[in-house]
Image (cartoon, rainbow, N blue to C red; front, side, top):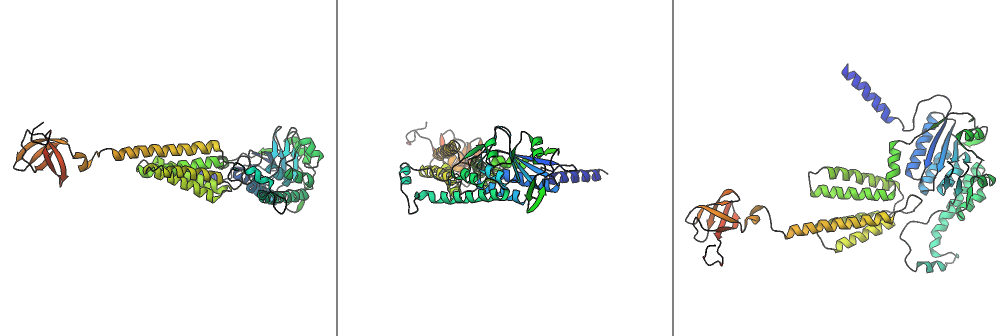
Amino acid sequence: MIFARVALLAAALLAAAVVSPFSSTGSGKVALSVAIDGAIGPASTRQLEEALDTAAKRDAAVLILQLNTPGGLVTSMREMIADILASPVPVIGYVAPAGGHAASAGTYILYATHVAAMAPGTNLGAATPVELGGLPSLPGGEKDKDQKDATGRPPGDAMMAKVTNDAVALIRSLAELRGRNGDWGEKAVREAASLSASAALQEHVIDFIARDTAELLKLADGRTVDVAGKKQVLATDGLPVETLEPGWFIRLLAVITDPNVAVILMLVGVYGIIFEFTSPGAVAPGVIGTICLVLGLYALNLLPINYAGLALMLLGIAFLAIEAFNPTVVLGLGGVAAFLLGSALLLKVEGPGFAMSWAVIGPAAALTLGLALLTGTYVWAARKSPPRVGGEAMRGLPVEILDWQGGEGHVLALGERWRARADEPVAPGHSVEVTDVGDLVLTVRRRDANNNGAIR
């Protein structure tokens, strides 16, 4: 009977574990709501994907996507747009609460939704792609911008022109699909234009302004939208609204996919493993280090990183680890230079909330160098100090003769009785010291002040 109860409990726990963090019970038509608050990144993509999956499984009338974001990664934004366009459930984009905004990537996502709305006191726009990540401009680099190639553009602007044109094509295609103002969308991309809620309504960028979700559903009721290639009339007035909260994994993902956090996790992981190798049996540093390293590498894998930058960072860490155990100064300085250069090159592109902070990377590099130098100092001091164990440690050790006959006898050394021999005459009462150890036999000699036979 007990085993049956345990089996039932295990089955219940297993069922609870496999349920989606957004799943819940309920019957009848409902409007589900999911809030994207913060930078658009891998966590936002996962959150929307699970929300759409839950909405489809529950046959929800609509999914309200509440946006309050400064923008984010282009890769994550495109994945979210693709999920919205393929969704069998209509998605209502809603910029809220008052004071919120859907800037940069948020503007593209709002354009992709089946119905777009904003709360009073919100804004959208400034959708110009950010510059490609990399090293900061060198002194005097501004002068090169005055030079132009055959197309009339500065040499460094060719890639940005391609990225901008691609962004314009995307927002125009979304505007044509949803019947919104494509001209203003292009202006938001090329000129970083922004609009308030009332101005966005006048420019036909959004469908209406709603103060809350109840008014949002009332105004959306009766609208005809194109859902996955099929016309559908929304029946949303008076629907109950259920908010989908993100699960623990999405919350964790939102934290570790910050590139600064990912780099710190990687540093903790590498040095935890190094400490475990140098001090076997500690266990905790190895376990914590391995977990942190895996989390850091997993987070970096989700970000648009430059693998050359990652390789430089790992090379810098390796140099600093070698410096700690074999002080050379050159390896330490080279390790810091490689680490900082790799940090500058780590991200292919940067977006709001996804940029390397020198306020984090600089102290991390300094702390790593300091740790390497401190460890190196202790290692160097240990090398120069006399040995403390073994035969080498017994050389020069004063011992007491217990008995002696001929050239051999027994002495008391370190509280133990040892066999001993001498190449010179000695006798009990003489002050002697160890000169060598071999086959558990001590070689001793008299401790004379001037090595002339005078006993001290």
